[in-house]
Length: 179
Image 1 (tube, rainbow, N blue to C red):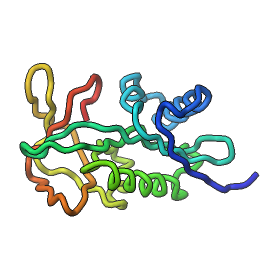
Image 2 (image 1 turned 30 degrees about the horizontal axis):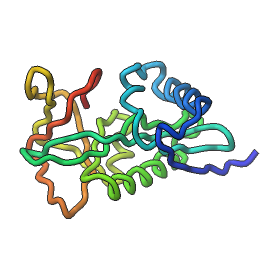
Image 3 (image 1 turned 60 degrees about the vertical axis):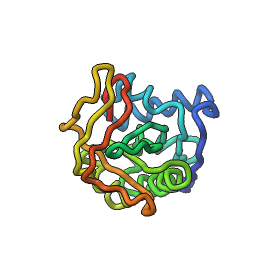
């Protein structure tokens, strides 16, 4: 058996039912059973970067489009969801390879990238160019714009945008975790 890892990108609609099942199983393993139905829903409808070892999916990162405001300026955000590498393959560079591909997708298709980091994932994201958002974080909701001070957000932006990270950052509303 070879240790060669290959990567490909597929939109949700291009994934087979077998791949969707394998992906859901991978995320349940990676997130130790804490990957909710809302988390799964958030990961669908965008681009899936898949890491393969033979016929097995060993890593995944989804980028889905979200509307965000920086201050009062609207941007098209590429939001990273369901990032994970099978425990047997962690600390072997698979996550870094996934993030290099995610960064390229963000650079080519979105104004900026956004993610809500786990403590375990923060060093990987920071090491691939993502920055903590120190400004106020908030969300559009059915009840108006609501501050989300307990949510941590990291961003990856094009230098030409000149983003002011001290401005409020507002995301669109969704079920489950808004960030």
